[in-house]
Figure 1 (spheres, rainbow, N blue to C red):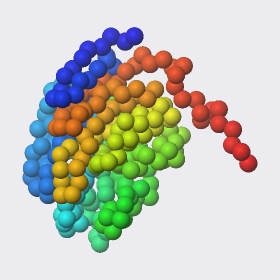
Figure 2 (figure 1 turned 180 degrees about the vertical axis):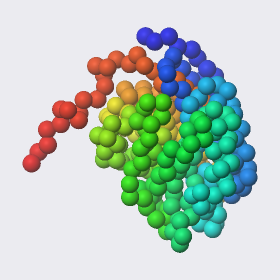
Figure 3 (figure 1 turned 90 degrees about the vertical axis):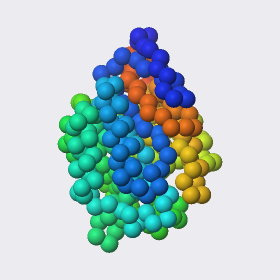
Length: 273
């Protein structure tokens, strides 16, 4: 068994093992349309995560301006706006990368999007949510049509947003491209407890994937968020998980997994024709 240590973060206990890749997630209430507050919260979280040695911080879905804002489309942000420069500088100052969801304005279209910065502030990836959830999202957003991958400290990494990660074909497609880490900004609400309890760990186990799933907490409009943000390892084990309240959790990805327990379905699959 790998040597490890327990870390207590807010209302969640993290089992962190000594590993080369240290990741973090921010579970927080919505900024409720206040972009300045959202940027300040992200900057503060990046400073804390960077001081603890994290290489990437994952924040919730459409965190800017907030997921369940009534005027989210009018508050959507341009991909290359000043807000992105603020976050790039914050990553560089903290020495920690960031993956965060935002509502993206692209001409007459709005996308449920996410971007990722490196620990030096370099823009690594832009992604648009493929699987829009429910009538509200479909009324606001234009769906994305492509995966996005990038390198994070030698680990091939991708972004999926919330509902995306619940679709096995998307996770399998990324695994087939050699992706072993998925960063997932999310806005998971009552009553969908099974997603954090079962779906995300199962996706990790079934595709030998590491998944960082960063959710909101608290109430936003008519939605009550579940919290339960987590990091799942390739064997489906939950490396770290938050409770229902605000948390910034930092976790080391385990190295010494039992490789005999890991997925081999890609090699073993016998299609029926």
